[in-house]
Image (cartoon, rainbow, N blue to C red; front, side, top):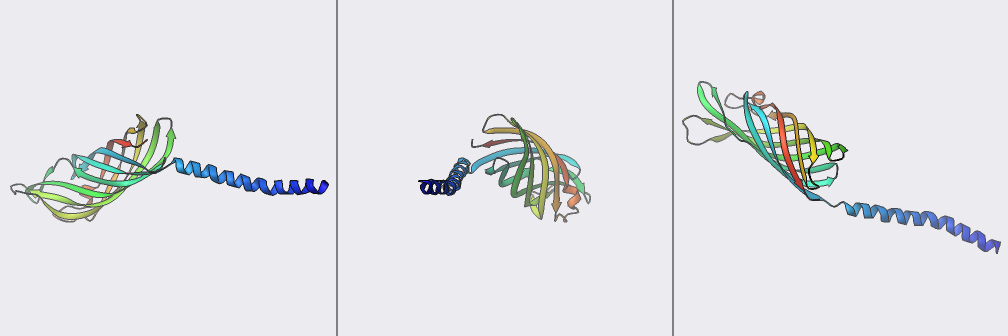
Length: 197
């Protein structure tokens, strides 16, 4: 009888960790399956300086939420109004368009409020039009990247609104008398994001 008791105790000791491991794996799988990839799309407006003139910059972005604190996607952006300036004695209008990738980390959340750090990187073309010519011509390709700090408020489970600001850097602008410093700019942002809940 004592022998059976000790065999039972020994089996129970070995079986408990195994059952606990099976239970842990099952719980983890359930948690993992609860968070599937979710899509998001958004619109952002910036107030920028372009060739030392105030301008409006719009972008649309979208992608996937990899986890509640990180999302990854693509963006397309354009300057909404041509900047009119004088270069080498000629009146010209300048704007630009770009495409690229977006990554956003949300390290701080409290209730419906959160703070996030979006970073973008992309490429595009500047359009420069001399006054009196019929169409603008994309003359200068560039690379662009920016980083920002956003303050977000979750209006509904699917809708987020926020404000923020950051700095945008350019590389490769060197034609028509312009350089990177003419396009580099701090910016203020206002945005809205919609995502699956």
